[in-house]
Amino acid sequence: MLTGAGKIAGVVGWPIRHSLSPLLHGYWLEELDIDGAMVPLAVAREDFARIIAGLQRAGFRGVNVTVPHKEAAFALGHVCDDAAREAQAANLLIFHPDGRIEARNTDTVGLTESLREETGSLEGRTVLLLGAGGAARGAVLAMNALGAAEIRILNRHADKAATLAMALKPRVHAKIETGGLADWPAHAAKADLLVNTTSAGMKGNPPLALDLTALRKDAAVLDIVYNPLQTALLKDAAARGHKTIDGLGMLMHQAAPSFEAFFGTRPQVTPGLRACLERALDHA
Image (cartoon, rainbow, N blue to C red; front, side, top):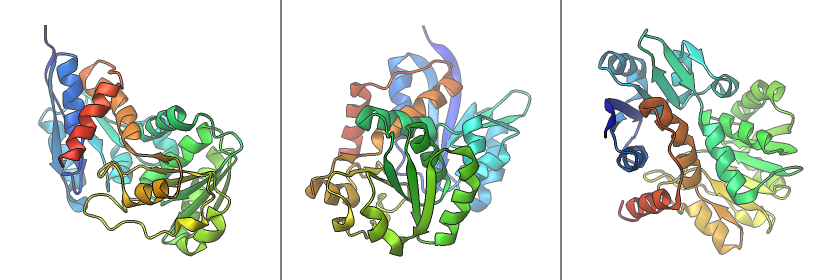
């Protein structure tokens, strides 16, 4: 018996062709026998608010939001959850029947659950985080939730990293330091975990130009990019003997609460789902 007949949601980004969200949600829709759809929508920055309003009027249940719209999505929310408020960014917009838009951030829980599976606690550890955008905000909160003692944020524009740190310091117990990419060697030597939250290395984008010889041999490397699954950063790290963590775990875990919001049922993250997504990436 079908449930949730005709429920439609979207995923909004620029570009959007790289997104696995339609396949991921489609897998769960078929597995759970739900009549619904997840529609990919390529939306430029300047059109974001107008398109969101149109999707509301068209009867969409809501949208997932990816690069570069997460901070703009938060600004559109009439109400928001604590994670979105703390990150000042949203990757999930839920359209309510009374016209309200609810902004949520599931990136934080997605990254937290993915890291918990791969590394367990970060108690007492030092994390080096690359980037200072919406994804970086959620990542800082995830590292803090896992007990990191120190989080060092490096960004091409050091002033943006400093602004992010200033905004988040009142919300985290971890010590936060910032710098520019030129400061990489000094910070890399002290890191237990390197996290790339930028879109560098994503399909169609140039890779990160980092000399990993500065990184401690026992440091793990996480790239939240999932297309390609093995970015140049992860390939380089693996070749040097580092433990590597791809972005697929975060993608799957952040999608589960979105699916529940759109279609009314909480799905499970399973090896079968991962295998399905890996096959799609192999043929992309």
